[in-house]
Length: 132
Image (cartoon, rainbow, N blue to C red; front, side, top):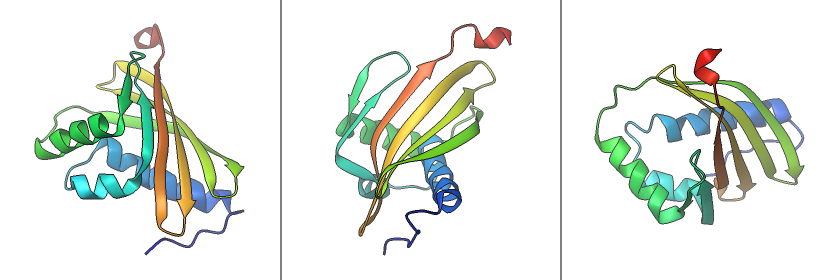
């Protein structure tokens, strides 16, 4: 059942999306079916390298990550949420992988009667970030 989040309560939306976003970075215990339910049929991703990924490619990657314990450290911070339209939100944040690889991330989420779905995700490398 879909969570009932008031369309105008941005603090609740932010908290919910931060929780959901973490599942993509640390998918331990999350099944492919769980990811499929969270991703819109037309989902697309642009990775930090600039490469584009289809929904199927991302589902394959997430399934592999969930099957193998990971030693990398993934930290996220500086989350912001902006309402773009009724039920459509842009989540932005910074992510650091293994204390070296810093990226800025954005995810477009949609809240429907079926629940939350991720529509689009993009990561952009921050050059020289290891020097800061």
